[in-house]
Image (cartoon, rainbow, N blue to C red; front, side, top):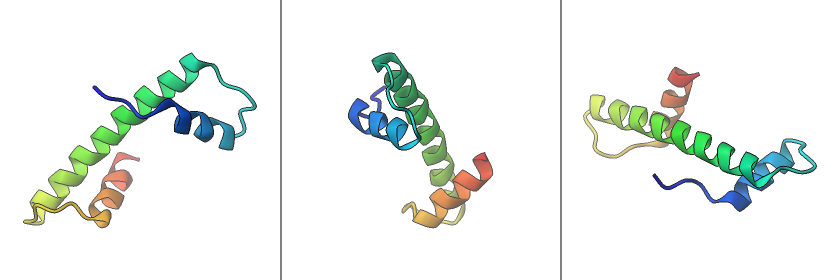
Length: 69
């Protein structure tokens, strides 16, 4: 499984208020966000299919996030 790049993850942590973060923390967050993103994407695809479409729309992703959380 390919994960999100570490540099943007470091920026996310920094924007969240972390003055510093270890490489292990960045890798762990990258893995978790990748897993979560894949779950949301799968749900969005199912929503699109249920609507009779092959194309996933932003509204499908929004609904998938609402259903997940």
